[in-house]
Length: 128
Image: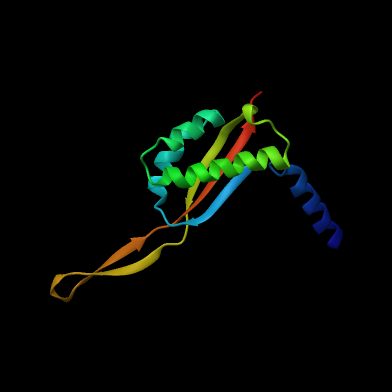
């Protein structure tokens, strides 16, 4: 039993994605708003993506810019990859936990207010 578990962990390590990435969890922003920003940088060169994010008017651009810089630093320091060779291979957002709050309305009623959060992932890769 134990040898089978060890074999499985070895196989999992070999199949693990080796590309540099960065993750930001529990960001208090709606995934739909973050997705708009991520769609603009997907597939772009790192320098171009950084310029797009720094000049974007969206609130999510600031968080994504910080995350992209973190992914670049991970690539340079952990994988020894040159910054000029990098591009944004994948970037996606997943919904995080939703805070449910009450919005008081007229005539004793109450509406539900959903404060959404996001988990953002940016994966970089080298140009071929």
